Image (cartoon, rainbow, N blue to C red; front, top):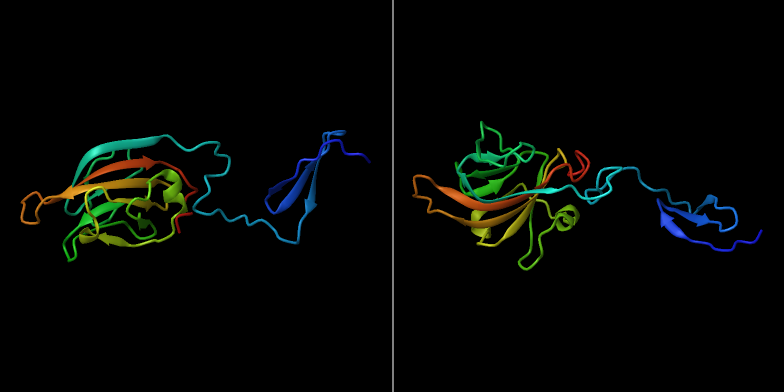
Length: 185
């Protein structure tokens, strides 16, 4: 059988050939390796053609023991009610820090590392919290939630801890359902 044009693609651990003459697609099994059906944090949800539209809010003043919930319609500080939510500024026990609830992940990006949806999807240097003394104005960190939301947070600064309205200032860009739920684990 003569094949006029062969196009080889590695996909899912197999090799696909497209025959110019017949237009059929055949899968040749490669070296016994099988593709994993478990999604990785860097994969968008199945069937997703493009990244979700980001929701951006600048100039968020997040008071101590308040939280942001990325799935809510508006990114506004809310009383934590005992839950860290997707991002909380906590200070009731030292060190003062930003944290997230159990099952979510924080990743402090390196200075000079460009923050983006892709960077947040790909990074795996997970932390439960980031002490404020590790953040300087312009520092960026990612929040990956078990609900599949990804947040890119830019730290703008903090008031003095003696200020009666002690808070941190942040900018937030959130991509809702950017990964499959629970793939942040």
